[in-house]
Image 1 (cartoon, rainbow, N blue to C red):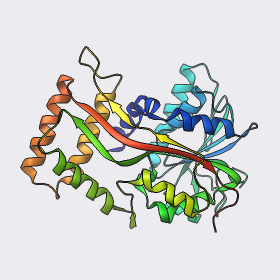
Image 2 (image 1 turned 45 degrees about the horizontal axis):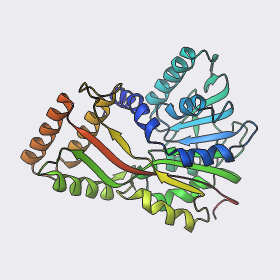
Image 3 (image 1 turned 120 degrees about the vertical axis):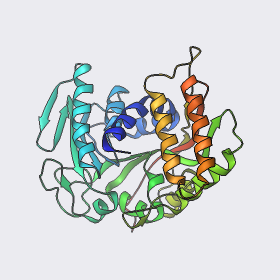
Image 4 (image 1 turned 135 degrees about the horizontal axis):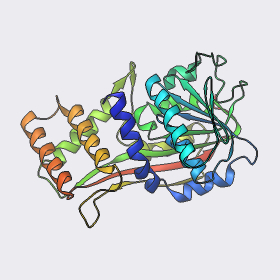
Length: 315
């Protein structure tokens, strides 16, 4: 997926995530959110839709929010997307050297791969160096009060990454990990090749490597409970956050959500090009796209959200 198509995918996915995010877990985050101006760090933040969501849902109204992503162009797109989103809603927008201020929330844009950021050597997109070492979100080198990862942890090796990520939090800091894939992708109506395709897709997730590191697995959601207990930060709240996309009575999908499903199909095709017979894969994907074009296709992905806090950084 090119950066341009990925930016469109992330923008289109916002309404899907909006519906999916578990409100019970969100309520726990809202209850525990610091009353003053929190320092928030979101890893793998992409286009910045979570910043908009938390402002829109009045979970935050002030503070400093660090958007971390490995893709510099995507971070540039984030600046523009957030500025447009805020302007449309009457929020003041101020362009900063390392980000943008939306009302009373300063958004910092930091380009880094998650593993490298945890290990130090972070740089702001505007060219300014972010204080080295494990300094979390604060421009003054302070640790983060809140750590967010949305649809990200199933793309990293959680047992390896989690201790370092939680060390970016101040004592009693909060984590909110949302849209963690948990081993079930469903398309309706049924297709004779579904089981074969999904087994191969999950196997690809389990064997994936990025930046020379293991990169996620197909049952991240359920395994998070054990991983968080191991590092001494068991969840305080949890719940399902399933994606469900279907057409309305008129046969059209809401907003740009047909594009989301199309990109999921493209991702599956790319992942399985060397794992599944080419003729079978083309037949399956072609049937699914035909159903998408007529509004018949339903897409469901099972995921889990968790929220909690740490009392001291993991050793």
